[in-house]
Structures are given as structure tokens and as C-alpha cells.
Amino acid sequence: MQFIAENEKYKVYSIYEDVYLKEKQYCHKQDEFSEKDRCIGSHYGDPNDGIITEDYVIVSGHGILNL
Image (cartoon, rainbow, N blue to C red; front, side, top):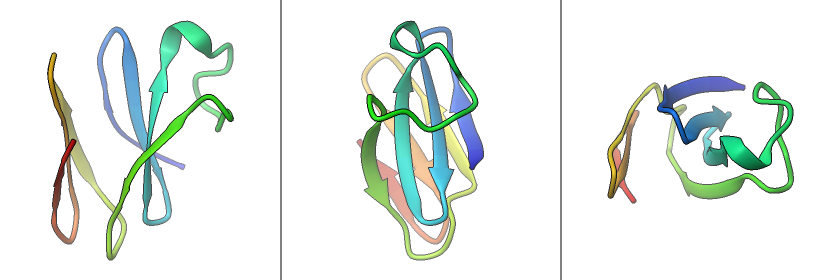
């Protein structure tokens, strides 16, 4: 599990090539996968950077996902 971006409400992380969005208010363990986390995309190659705004999650790696 690699953490990519975080703000006060959300945490974005990857497990291999899949990217997940965690809503912090619904999770007791912030550093573990939860079934409530949403898979928001996949990359060819592991993602490595991200930005969370009020309207978007942007993740980059071998390409860019704008969700």
C-alpha cells in the first residue's frame, strides 16, 4: 500500500496498479484497506503522485487519471 495524497476528508492510496479513495470519517484504521474504500482507477505501472481538490482527484504515474 502506497499513500499518494491526503486532505482532511480523504486519503488516496494505491495497491500495485489500482488506486483507491478512502473517506476518513467512515474508517477506523486509516492505514489499512477497507471494503468501504472505492477503487477509482488503474494505471499501467504503479501510480506515484496525486492531488485532491474540492472537485477532483488527480493521480499520475505512467499516465494521468482525472476523476
